[in-house]
Image 1 (cartoon, helix red, strand yellow):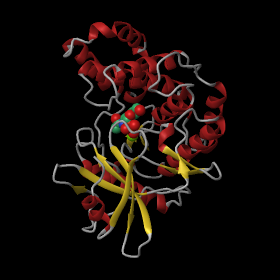
Image 2 (tube, rainbow, N blue to C red):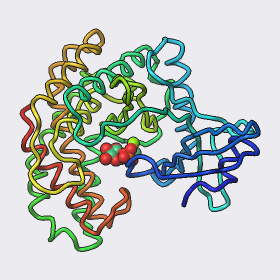
Image 3 (cartoon, helix red, strand yellow):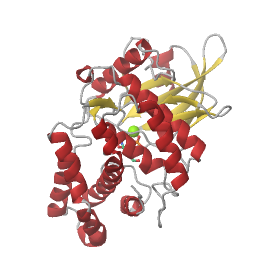
Image 4 (tube, rainbow, N blue to C red):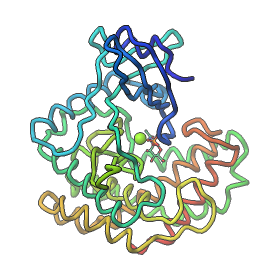
Length: 344
Ligand code: GN1
Ligand code: MG
């Protein structure tokens, strides 16, 4: 459902909506780029997004986190674009439609693109540098400043426990079709345990991290190729930097997008460029333990993503949007193949 006029008007007052189109490739929320005309007759554009309130059960807390982050980043002179939420005419972050849909609006970064399909080494370098700048600027923000909006988001023990539970219940009788993938995941159980151990023993600093720094969540200038903004701040929460590094490796370096079937290969030149761009910026804030375990972060997040897709497949596709019945199983195979080709 495209955002109807009353949704746009909730944020911008008496405007005429000219055009709306779906935007981006998010698996959870619905995002649209909308063009409208205000009283001055000038055309304006904005991003309108309906939050998935099953995943984000506390939408107000998500918006408080985003707003607090924007304020902090502004105060430390963060050099990239800010995702400052736009307010409704009633000065709220969210507008709720009659169907219970929860809408918010953001400024649109024009003349920019997300390098989500097989980023080149240059794009990987720029994008990783941008995420590094983002994390470095957040290093001075106290962790209690943000709320945990999705509990246990990257909690390795919790993710594994949920997987075990669905294996036991097998609500749709799909376990039999996924025997090989389940067996492969069990081979990676030690990776989850290694991360849990580092966390439980307090060896990894708790930082505010992005938690979803995929290649599709950074915008580069169409003109210069330089980073314009890091977007999708919904999962900003206290966590470990290892998962952010892992998500970059998982989404920048493979030679296939996460929805494609087949053998995935890691592109070494892209991996090298991403490591260079990231390290160049985050080196001053990295602790020796973080530095030593970045490659563990890459293995962990690829394995966790495989586990999450498989958990969803076995549960009956209740979390990620799917385009066809075996979509989540295909995504699982893609991540497992990626994991097998990681040189780290
Ligand atoms: C989801 O919706 P999107 O594409 O921003 C998910 C991420 C996954 C990603 C896999 C809140 O992100 O954690 O890594 O799909 N977001 C949430 O593509 O679960
Ligand atoms: Mg996201």
